[in-house]
Length: 346
Image 1 (cartoon, rainbow, N blue to C red):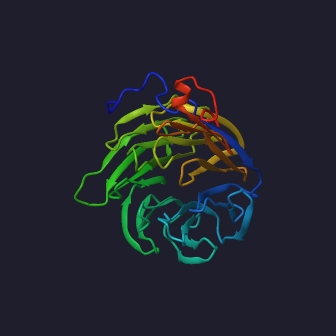
Image 2: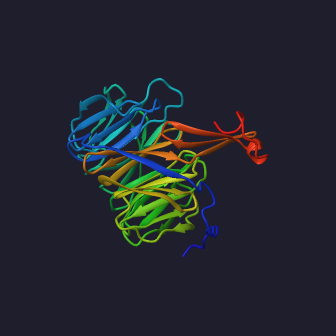
Image 3: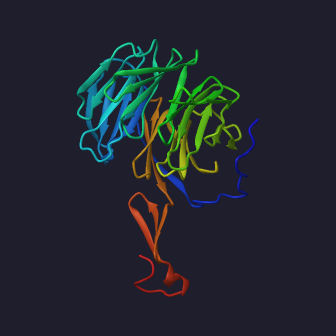
């Protein structure tokens, strides 16, 4: 048993008023939405078991709707880093993955990447390499153009989720009840520990705070440091934790379960929990600015959750996000002096 790396705070330390404003776009797909992700221009791409790939604009209106060849099981956008072109990669139930441009053009097909479904696929933070995990228990490393670089490891059991370390030199993956951090260098030792009491389904590793979050069929979510030491463990939720995603700055993470989306801070505290008519949420994705998260629902619906209660301070001015289209600005110096006037609240 690993010791706690830090004590749990007695009350929520940050984001006291943090919450989500949730809306649902029903029946975007005729079957389960199995993956989604935001482009650098805040357009949302979704893939589903109806063999459709949809692109929604910034106003959540359908921009394009194209066919894909097989049943998708994994999805990931390449980091943009300011580039005008951006590709995504889609893994399929038959073991294939495809690299597809934003306009729907197939740039590369990799047949038989795995025996059985490609369950998870992730680009590294620089976008120069990607890693896949499959139903066959293999974790494999590929170039950004889809050339096999190494059969990284074989677990013997399905790999449902993986994540790159902040420095891109290690891979975190889950298999059965265990989490493993394996360095890319063969001369360095891996760290493996029992993380849950049932199969681990989802993991994420934040590059800013260096914390890991995991969730599984034991209905719990847990936070770990990069040495595998437990920072927080939740009480069991009502249903299995099916998806997790850190905000880019690492202050919060979103959690998806059956008909539920939650917002938790980096200490594990749940600040917002909402019922959504989506079925199980298979995947979560944040916009690059960390203000909005989208969830892929088993019912074919997609839920959108805007983060409210964010606060930013510059000199004596404090801005707070109150609504989807409303920011409340307060002059703290005037408020402190109990002055009311044009320089006060706006």
